[in-house]
Amino acid sequence: MIKKEEFITIDKIKWWVWTSENESRGTQPYCFKHNIRMYPELIYGQKYPYQVNHLRCAECEKLYELPRTYDNEKQYVLDKVESKIIKGLKFINLDDEAIPIAEDKKKNSEYFVTSLLTESKLGLRLVVYAGKNGSNQKTQIFIEPGIKRLAFDQNNLHPTDIFTKLEATFQDGTKAGQKKK
Image 1 (tube, rainbow, N blue to C red):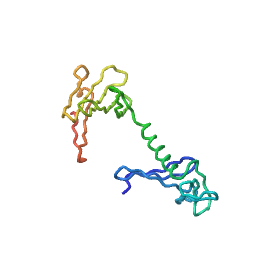
Image 2 (tube, helix red, strand yellow):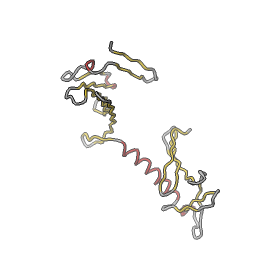
Image 3 (cartoon, one colour):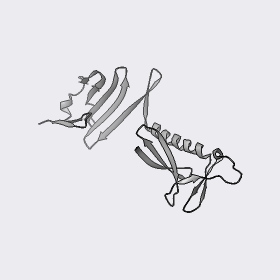
Image 4 (cartoon, rainbow, N blue to C red):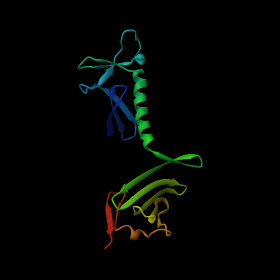
């Protein structure tokens, strides 16, 4: 079963790229004009399938030339997709190990909220920063699910000085919230 799919254009060919539930990826070239699958075709002088570097659309009979052999081009497309994914990741360097982190920022006119997910020696740590724009005062909340710890930085504002509503989504998808009165 396909988990995720997208179209991407590489080397003037439209490629359908999909990811299955087991995280393996596959590709298939399509004709721009007819949106129909294109298949490799041997041309004059090519005797073996591994030499194929042309694709043909069954509708328009147009022959598309690839800069690489068909198998190498398919791998190149997958490499480009993974490169796009990796480019979006952020890394920090601790003890010469690349540790991926996630960061999210939300701003409105008066307040800001920034979250930062890191990997530490104790496991995952989510840090939430919030405060008033233009002010040096903020609150910091630390969530460490691996050691079941929730804390805030006592040198900064208390979270109730900033937040008026808190909502949590649990592993089973249920949500719970609390609102300041």
